Length: 237
Image (cartoon, rainbow, N blue to C red; front, side, top):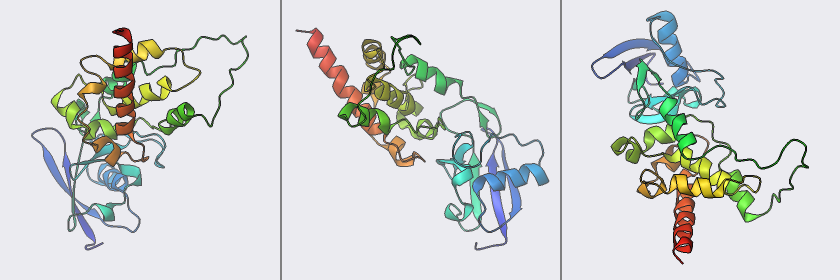
């Protein structure tokens, strides 16, 4: 640390920016800084977190203009001198202070048919899955998504088109499209090929760059583009 005191600016809406002085500690995370402010200076500060170990995804915020999960981001890695600016995630409605409304994010999972389409009952035998098949590898590649919406906040396409399904929903659709147990292939392809679907992606790659779990939504979206194009030309025969 360059200073024993951190200058922490918290963006609390379009017209409010509060500055706090926070003591610096070793191994301090951005979430620790926000928690210190709430516990010691401003008890009205609203934010969201749960597990603190990078599993739940609920603590994501903008840190110096970059979306990050704050529980696993050490403050020493993001300081500009002794200062840092923390704000609510971009591209989502702000409920209060640093807490955003996640409904639009999850609504798009549903819109992208990012839900399992089963065809068996509990009385049927469990369908075998070849874990080494190329399709299974693709399906597995995105299953560690923790719904933090960092990729959604990083996406400039979402910023320009709020109806765009977004990288997380499309990655989920790609996982299910490659899942041998899922029987919703036609529904998925139809959902993601629409005017607000995968073909809106400009392949800028911010989603992949900032994913805290090092997933690759951009490649998943590219896969959807290929499969929807194949489906379109097959129907045209």
